[in-house]
Image (tube, rainbow, N blue to C red; front, side, top):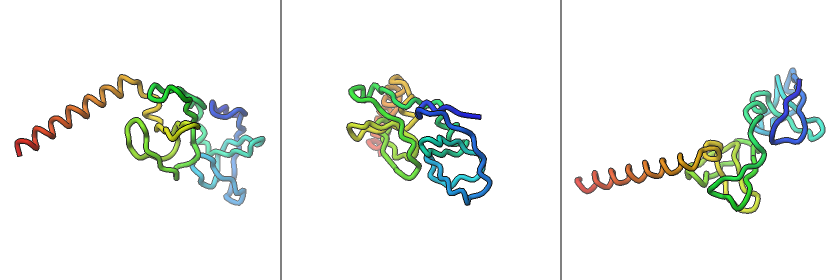
Length: 139
């Protein structure tokens, strides 16, 4: 059984590692692999079965309206690299899209949200801020 990730050029074969003595590490979550996994033997790339399926259909490269002058590349290098999403400004970690030419990063939710979602969220934030100002003025 094989799996093809949109973000990797080779197919990945299914493997079942019985114990942790195989010393294989997942490239996505950076944890030791014990049990079901997918591997590209050619690139020595190993992923837990769940990690592989979580990123299976994510495109390797996207163009986002907030950063249309550069392409954004999929980065699934692990959960231990926190970043600030340049769309929602929340601190996140794990799989994201980042620019290779400048420090622009988007979490997965923001990478695939429509620009209408962004406009609606900004309007809600503004109306919430206006309400807070009104409440503070009355205080």
